[in-house]
Image (cartoon, rainbow, N blue to C red; front, side, top):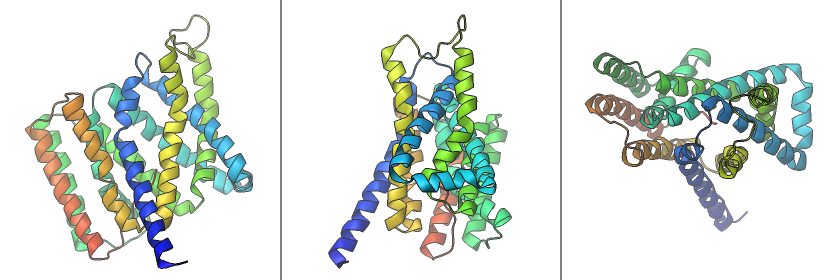
Length: 302
């Protein structure tokens, strides 16, 4: 392959990554548009339509890999566990947006890279560079300060950061192809999501399977596409650009969420949040320096 072709491939990878993280950063706009539906039902729809779309996708592109994963109990168990973890992450994020906690959700995804470093140390026995240790401590100080001064534990942020980190850890240990693996993950939780929707949509129930609003119904179905597309873009970008570069670009997502929460949805961003974010950002600066020095850092994927 010529150097021009390599350059083009790298540039395409950068575009895929930027578009992916911008899409994740703009997620609050999509979930905010789904009104009048309980967060649990929105989550169930997301699982159902994601599975339907992914199943069609893999049967057209990578059927044999998907079938081989389903036939191996060990892989099926690991992907089932990953499916439960990412379901918890999706559900918490939808709840955060619906309950006007977008800023707190953004904080969670700022903390996530530092949680990944910690999980790599605990579960993968990865050695931490000095700057990485400082980064984790700074994030811990920021969260502790927020809890004491604001009088409220940022549980939404930490649940999002920890579940996304655990999901990345499970995916790293499994070392499987992303789209067939995600299809199996959603397949495991699909029956429960469908049963929940059918139960709440039964005759006389408070919530129907599809709401009266045609637009809201279409958005619920589209949640499958909205879930799958960024993951496809992420997979494309990860094939051609360095992981360290992906680490820089990933900050687009929580930054956009923070800006949306403060300037579009008028969420509070008081001094307690500012100081907490300052500690976390300082930790991320240390994390970035460790990348620039060529230290090994684990970055989760979704």
